Amino acid sequence: MSIKSRISQLFLISVGFLLFSFLLISPALTQAAIRVSTLRVDFSADGNRYQDVFVQNMGDEIAYINISLFKRTDPAHDVNKIISDEGGDPKLFGLVATPSKMALDPGQTKRIRLLNLTNGQNQTDLVYGLSVLPVAPPIERAPSAANLNNAGQVTIISAYIIGVYILPKNPVVNLNLKRAGNILTISNTGNTNAFLDQCTQAPSTPVSAKTNNTCPDLRIYGQSSKTITLPAAAPVSYRASYLNGFYNLKSN
Image (cartoon, rainbow, N blue to C red; front, side, top):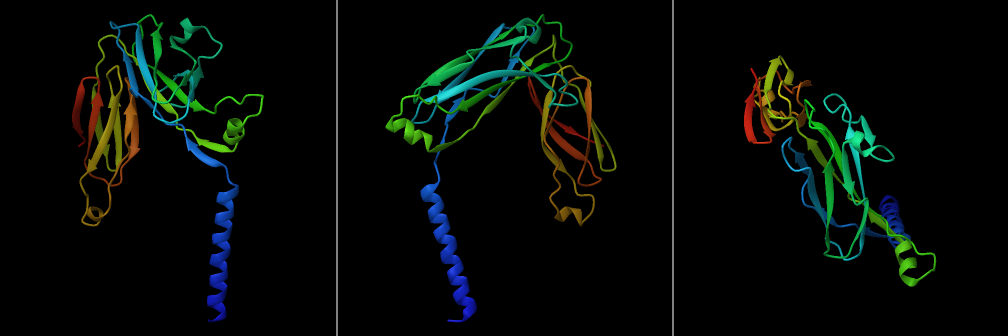
């Protein structure tokens, strides 16, 4: 065996040993397995003041859940501008979620109730997020075999953010796509949001026909517009989904 082959063999053995040692000393991985009944809640101006979201524990251990709300203050321009419901006046915030915490036995389902406190005078959507977050179980002070075992586990957290929309009266979507070269402007002169996906674009040249011409999925809110750069200077089409269904859009 050559010196080079021997070095390669020793290297592989060393890597294998390190991986085996890592698995021995690393905490066990567990996953908080929960499921929610919906990822979107709409409050219509003339509908119920409350709606329910159901959470089910799909795992084999008790699931501990924290529940909170936030409001997007400028969703049309910056979805990261948010305020929390913690410590404020619920009437000013406009929405309440109860309870704020829950524990679910394996297979158990519990309800989160959302209560709309707004006055119904909004001209466009009021946009909220409902966070459903699995958290680590509480550690009892008295040591036990179960607690010591759990302390050595790392839980993979899968949180849900559920979109909550308080709609204006007579919600309507009015979308328009206008293209100039490879720049596309999408405008919504309606008063409620729509989600655009399944974008397709005709190839502008034989060369571009060999590439994957994709453009982003996006949500556009009422009385707003967005501009994106397309992969090619060619017409584009989108599928728009909104309250009453789907329809197809095409640019010039």
